[in-house]
Image (cartoon, rainbow, N blue to C red; front, side, top):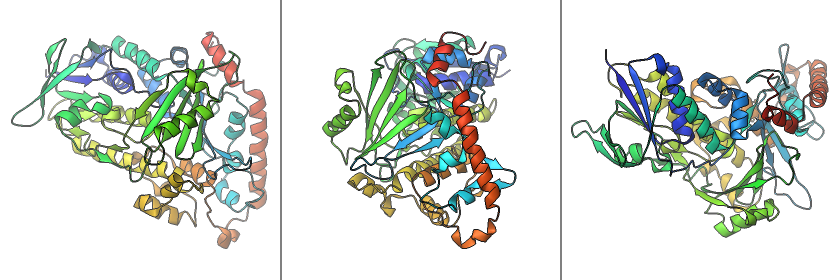
Length: 514
């Protein structure tokens, strides 16, 4: 009976999530034909660029076998119901500020009624913001309420949600789960890679602590260093800085002033003159980071912006500088090596796409891994799917920037048609006359649904003109009744759901899932 082996190089979220996912998928404790080993140095920490997730993480954690309550307690996690974008549309002036929400809950659909068209046909001067009109989640999140109630069970609730969490602690809980499922953990440092002289594939890796290690499949989770896929195999990196300009972040954590401070259940993304600042509420602290383009902003000015946002408190804590290059490797599976996480690509912290792509890669490797035959057989299909996902995420992220009417150079440059991908330009032209629909996208190549695009488009004030076909939407009275019901249900949910802080405190006290 042929036996196959997988060696994962690097820990962190990418390495340990992949290890745990594969161990669960292949039922490793009862599978004599497969071994999984993870090599990671305790000295090399997690990058931790972002501490937010997308709702897919709930299915991933459930599949791996981690209890939601254990996850929340172990990672200082809180609930995330979306992202609030502050001042992305206009530069604030004379006290004028604006924001919109990108919630995780899809827009409400009535019986046979798509409300999007009816919202578009309302008076722009008096209609409610898109997310507020289309879903109760806007009301719930703005009221600092949790997306679920005590007793509703693990990973379930009336509203769609993800989490904010401590990235280093997530790696720890994933490590424990993977090890419990039979993944062998070797503490050590990679010092060399040997290639097969005939095939060019990886023949072995060399470590300071364990000598030479071999495997059938090598998974590169070594972060930006990309020691296997980039260093040894020289798989090219495709930079997209001409489309996504941000390339640095200054990140810090600020403790709360008191333990009962309310916690927002969305990420705050506050635009500034050359990028944006994230603000994430964990159970014990806020994670804050200033993301910016070094072509448009000096490091010193970025520190000033961070200090201004934090009221000067960033001067009193450790601030990490995190450089990154937006882009990906079109060939992230080469011969017997596949890259997961930062070694395969990273775009920017916006919309938590880094973790989404780790989840996607782990699931695809599990489904495609050849239990017999050439281990590199899935490479072409894997690369096609991953590259298409990266390209589509680039479109989605660029959408946030290119519609802005802010006047600073960074934002003006983002509106330059030369910086907008051709596919996105084509879609924007079509969306002038109709809202985004499912036929604009191929599901297996997307990380975001059509309604995610709608929330950004109409939150940013994009104009879709349906006035010439107004008569095709005659059920105005019924639509208005549904809009009123959404408002009513939102008010009711905001009063009946527990405060976000109270729900998190109850989970940490061990009571919410009883």
